Length: 116
Image (cartoon, rainbow, N blue to C red; front, side, top):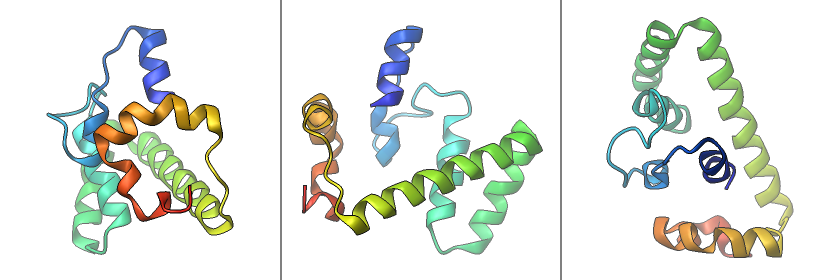
């Protein structure tokens, strides 16, 4: 929701389908393909893919961006795991505001949505 709201504020048109691999290209985010590969490698089990994505990110955006990107990914992963583990429900207003893109992207079918 934050990316969608940011896009409205900035006049950008983000393709949220890129988040689940259904989009065409970078999702409207600079270096979006590279960032997606890095995020997928972080969550995957292929150490070589992670090393490659890390090198590409470092070479393309620099070491500061690599650290920032890894920190953001770690934070989002932690927040999601904490919310799922404790059963924190998504607030009603956020459920309503995100219903359209959750349905479009198939997010409602994720196991973590079973208790929502």
